[in-house]
Image 1 (cartoon, helix red, strand yellow):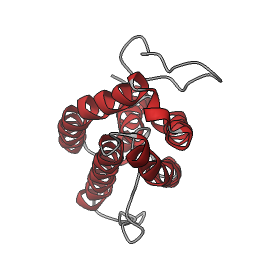
Image 2 (spheres, rainbow, N blue to C red):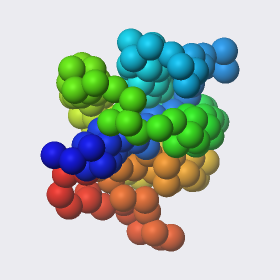
Image 3 (tube, one colour):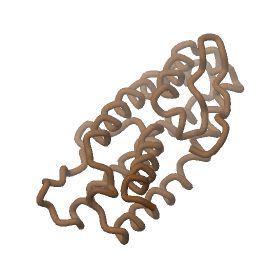
Length: 178
């Protein structure tokens, strides 16, 4: 595999995690690796971002799962909307980083892939189930939650393998694997 292809593959995996992430803590930020940082420090930056994504997805999943009726759905909407805004910020931070293939050794890329795989395996199924449950329940009649979920799906829908909803249409499962 060429360095360019490896870079694209690893960065795509990292960004696909990020595309479903949300609700980052305001104080939370991954350390920036200076250009002269040793390779171990660079790996820590990518791992820290991956773990932030995981935490963010767990937060949006918790918000989505809290909706059980109209009142709780309305109450969850601001948290889901905040998750979408925070994810956009995280995505911008990640986009500013060089691709992992540019800065990591092969062994470090393997470590990063393992961390990302483990994160994905634990967060995607519950997230997808929560989104689909709400869609199936018509968002419990909450227009606010429906709009918040649609906003989140615009930035995070690929993570739970759902495409953003077209106006008036329900999101559909995407075909293929990221």
